Amino acid sequence: MIEIRSLCKSYGKTPVLQDVNLNIPQGSVFGMVGINGAGKSTLLRLMAGVLKADKGGVCYEGQDVFENEQVKKDIFFLPDDPYYSTGTTGQELARLYSAFYRFDENIFSSRCELFRLDKKAPLRNFSKGMRRQMFLSLALASRPRFLLLDEAFDGLDPQSRLEFKRALISLTEEQNCTTVIASHSLRELTDICTHFALISGGRVADSGDLQEKLGAVYKFQIGLPEEASPALIPFPCLKCECSGRVAQIIVRGNREEIVQKLEALSPLFVEEIPVDFEEYFLIEADKGRERK
Image (tube, rainbow, N blue to C red; front, top):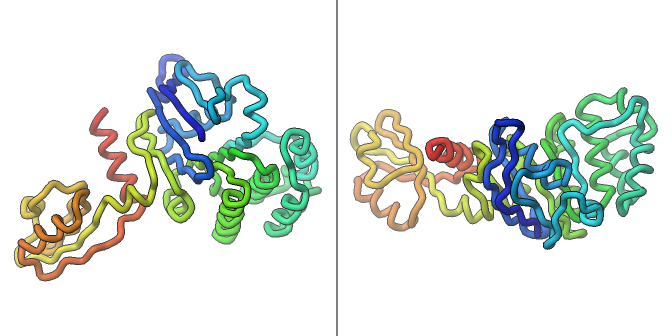
């Protein structure tokens, strides 16, 4: 388990993270979501032990990560813009990582073949997407216990994204790896994440089991016998949009009670629609801004 307690970080006089508290279960795929500038990348760097917190800390199975080389051996951190020297090849990076991780050359070679990458070619000759594929191949082949990824899907084509998701699920199931992915691409995270945290304004606006959270929010489309208006809906809504005699609402509460109250409006129809992660994120992000 990864435990984050009372974490604070500022750059100069500008606060970036304020009193962040999270528990990330072992073996989970944890999505760190938020708009650009929310503090996701800074939080990942603190989790990797690259930055020192102003207050609080990050513990892996009870051990603080900062200046703890023993803990860092189990962590692979892939930033959004990984550094590499001029002329560096994937094969050279593989030899480097072999000195620090339980590196599996067979996994690395198979990933390179899958992505059609020449591991002996200089990375400077690769496109952004190809470089991303190479570093993801290195990350998977390192077989870490904790994998921290910043914008993992950035620059990947649809097929590469699918292949990477499959590989990540295999790593999680076979190695009990805990993966944390910071991203603003919510649709890419929906079908892979088990847990999440929404970072808004440097704070955790919401977190938990993704399916449990989505399962507690309901979306309905209702056809009414008169012009639709939010005032006609007999309970508070997280979101309400009206067009003509049709209202579309998102609400949290007891499903049976919600349906009973909607039926009492003598609607022409009531249709339930699944709530996706992006809709949930936008609602919770708005709530977070209102609390500031």
